[in-house]
Length: 319
Length: 269
Image (tube, rainbow over all chains, first blue to last red; front, side):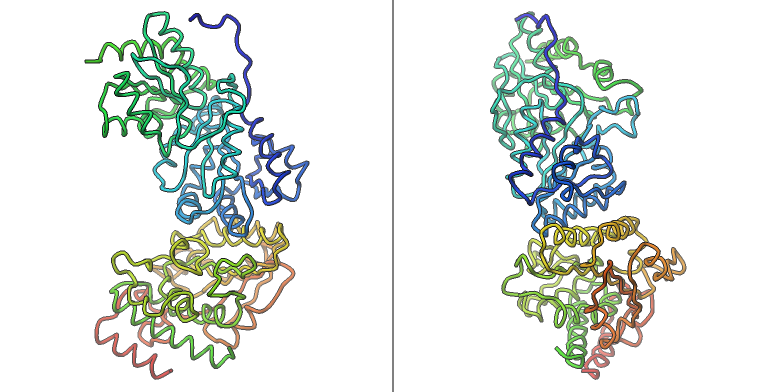
């Protein structure tokens, strides 16, 4: 398969989030949006216009924001707590643990501009630790959709799910990958391409890159399986074990530190159930330097070509 | 319950709390003794609650933000009928649902999990805001320790409560003047609390938090703004040798001390 000649249309997943949230709020008066002066960056402008009384803007106070979310849920509201992922998860982690996960509060966390979406603003504004911080908590599904279709599906799912969860969204444009009408299933990976030589696993902004990498590998005679794994917890053990047994090698790629994220979650399953050679791509345990998210992903070895090279090298390591 | 009945109930809760802490060999007895009059007034007079239906949507909400005094809450909940009184014997025992900090998913009547300080007030603000959004008529009460007011999250919540106009929220600060390892004056004094809260847009009352005749009317007061009761209390109240001694934050009495404490509380009964 040749790589596409023209670039596909890219979409900001925040728009799908905002549209879906507004539709949910129109149908359900208990839906509220909570934010920390992030109306613009969380794309809550439309929500504010349509449901002004249901936008709870606490100002720049993330700990209070998450606690207020827990209290709103206790009072029968359905809060979507929206903030830049770096501040939401970093500043309010103890509230996420005690007030939401441990208390089982029905609060939906929406981390906006995750990963290195705020690339040039520097590591204070990068959120490449959030998978590690959140996926260690019991009772908190962690989800990073790959495109606008999966984002909308995940937001709908979150509204119907009785319990806390963390949706990790980006603002970096991504092409459509999943079919229109896709229904999100928690903890279920999506097979985007089948193959028997190696498995590529990613989520969020990396899924379209591994899809392209699989095309490059095919030209080199390597048949790669491609899994979109939006749910980091609970991880899809069945798909991972099958990938290990049927393809014998697994590569992961994520807009996150290589420590504690998707790659680590996959490796934990592989080590326990079906050890095979693995390669984890991500930010290599450093504070990233200045640049756009796309540039930084490229520099950290996650261009489709570099992913394909890493996968080909991995295939060589198979026994 | 009338004031004298509430006073008697508070003494009975103090005694059961002491017994439980002594039996468990752990607890936070100083802050439990200081807060018990407030808990008693809430559960036996003020809160609109039904132990048979602890999740009723219109119930008043109560959050014990100083979650380390869970034993006092468990005893109060048990005496109010939320859990069997005999279960207090399992406090801190292996696999007991009555651990050192209250768990809302296991203990009926507990609204949210507390333990890390500075969590209860933001959650209470959310509860009160939810009532404003839904039109529910319940009132939300939250009790914090005074040392806990050193947490910045509380001041975030205090600002939000005023901004949201939460006249359906009452904060009680158990002002016993001691934190775990020192008097507040020696770390981050905070006092006087009243002008600070007033400056943030709250109505504030100061009472003797160990005098039932002052506690009840303060809790029943309704304000046009968020309302704070600075409850001046004594750490270890009711047990002479514990009173106002920082080392009784989480010390456990030995046999002799236990006998003296039990006698003092029983005499008062």
